[in-house]
Structure formats: structure tokens, C-alpha cells
Amino acid sequence: MEVQAGKSYFREKIITPVSGFLKEGISPKQLAMAFSIGIVVGIIPLLGCTTLICFALAFILRLNMAALQLTNYLIFPLQLLLFIPFFQAGGYLFSPLDIPLSAGQVSEMMSTDIMGAIRQLWFANLQALLVWLLLAIPSYFILYFTLLHILKKAGAAIETKKSE
Image (cartoon, rainbow, N blue to C red; front, top):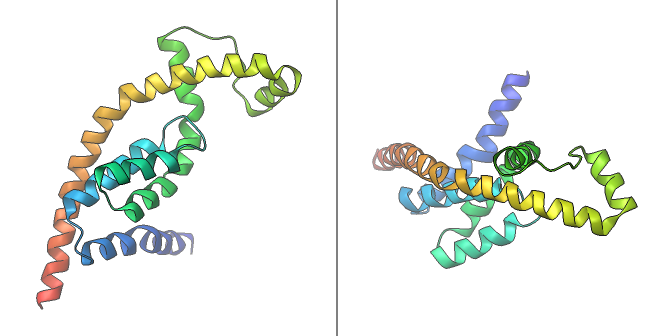
């Protein structure tokens, strides 16, 4: 029963919108770019900023806003999952910070000394952003070319169905 629910969710949230975008005439190249940017920006270790960043990039690069934001929203759980590892990698690569990384510890830190917490977390967040930046560019290109290949095949299959 769970496998069927997973297939249904995957079809509803991913397959149907992607085929809809392709049927609307959005090129596989444009979709691959929007999806890749949505994924890469969607995991940035800045909670609450990805929607605005994706909006600006869609506007500047003239990408499909719906495709970019859909990807950004779907990738949100991965952003939460990678948040602490980005902070830890930043501390490992640059300079270890003696700050707590559990939600409870951060909450307590904020309630006792909010300015000190902001100072400490700001620098840790900067390190996490640098780690993200190191990974973002190669990740974008890997995602882009992989998705472009998949979307070209999907677009060809849709065209074949149209002509039948």
C-alpha cells in the first residue's frame, strides 16, 4: 500500500507537472536550467531566503517561475537535512567554532544572549555558505546535463504520443 502511495505522490508532484511544462512548449533546456537552479538554490543554508533568490533568478534569467519555484519547494526537506552538515563542513574546512548545533541548544543560546548568538551563528552561517558555494557550481552542471538528457527523452516521448 505504501509503495502505491509513493508512486502516486511521485506522479502527482513530479511527473504530471514536468510533462505539463513540456506540453506547454517549454524547452528541455529551459526546464533543465530551472530545475537545476531550483535544486541548487533550494539547499542553500539560509532558511527563508530561497523563494526570494529563486524569484530573482527566474526574473533575471527569464526562466519559468512555476518550474523553478516548484523545484525549490519540493527540495525544501533536503535543505533542512543538509543544514547542519553544511555548518559542520564549514567548521571543518575553515575554523571550528565552539557553538552548539542542535535545535534545543541554539534556542537556549538565543534566549540567554541573543546578540552573542547572532554573532556566533552569523560567522558559522557564512562558513556554511562558503561550503555551499564550493559545491553549488559543480552540482549545478551535473544536475543540468543529467536533467537535460532526461527531459529531452521525455519531450521526444510526448511528441511521439502527440503525433500518434
